[in-house]
Image (tube, rainbow, N blue to C red; front, side, top):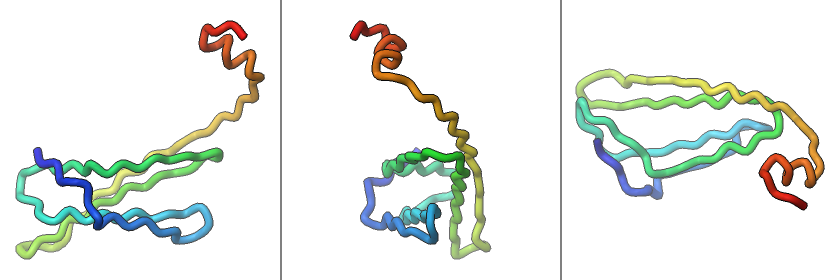
Length: 93
C-alpha cells in the first residue's frame, strides 16, 4: 500500500446550492497497488442526502477507468433537553 503525503492538489468547489465537488490528484499510481489519501473530509448534514464518490484513473496505456460508490445518509431529528442528553451519557446534571 502507498500513502501519498497530504497534497496541495486538493480542490473544493460548490457546484450548486447544497452540491459540492472535491477533487484530489494523486501523482503516480502503479498497477496492482492500492493508494489511500491522507486527506480527510467531513460531512455535516441536517437533511437526508447522498454522497457520491467517484475515482478516475488515467493511464498512457489504456482508456481512463472510473469507479463509483454512493453513500445514502438518513437523518432522524430527535429533540432532547440537555438533561436528557446528560442522562443518556450517564452524567447527573
